[in-house]
Length: 430
Image (tube, rainbow, N blue to C red; front, side, top):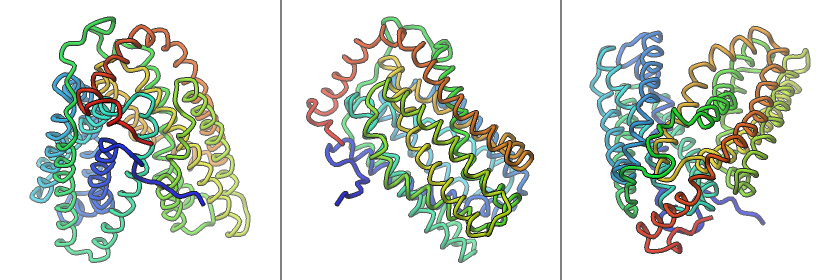
């Protein structure tokens, strides 16, 4: 009987990274579930101001993610990650006392910057503690842990929503602030990874924005990342406006996705270990996402409700499979094409693709799905296929440049593991 494994099976560094991920995602799951109603009912902000403030905050966080990632590269990712986890917790704590739009915007910007920088610093920390061959497998475990934590945290947030009291909302926010503090403690117990200082060699003086293939990869990947607002926004709107299915089905599909990633992401990433296998995984993901869109489009036909729901579930399962393959492939690509000693900076920039998808997603998905219906679904599926094929072409273009810094990167991996853990044996994981 095959067992589902969430935490990495071996390696103290990988397991502590997973524990830090689990702790912070528990608080985040509760926060994401309750934050909109907290800002509306407790703080007293209008939905328009909440949306505007969060949009501005995440744009700011995306912009500072690159310099914060560069700071992690130069000063050391462990210390930077610890400070940013504490900063994120402090920002959540600030939400407890804000009562107007101005302070809310400041706290939201502070939170988004800390979270964006923390994500980049964690990736740089992972690159220093885990061997190159193991990174994608460990990232798959971290993603599974993240989704499991979000699901459990969402349950706690649901209890607060059921209570509906100011005290319940404040308890959730306090829980999230504490979770980031505990995350910082866990990260502080990881081995030290030496900062790169001033980068030498072929990549010296090159900011990530001057690495045109990597910039193009990030932009093309942002198209594939439209799958995220598709699940949280596009599909619920489609169900509500264009199908006969009950609206609660959207929540059920979200749960299926969250639990599915937690259960099967590790297995989906097993075959991804190089740029070639990564581009193959992304290419397959585009085809599967197209199939998901086609099946979802069928749910808009005049059929019995149970058939409509069955089509939606089938489309969601295909979406899950495509998502996991895309995640595994994009992780491998984003790490392998980052120069030695620049992982934090490059991961900080690669993460901006998600901000682009979340910003453009509402407009694009509403126009395609609600406005155009079935043709919109097929066009969206075509975009996924085109982006998955295009990503492979850009990666092949970027490989010669990456080869120039391959030897320094391998040396850097060995130094990071040796300095942080006393030898390669300490980095064993999946």
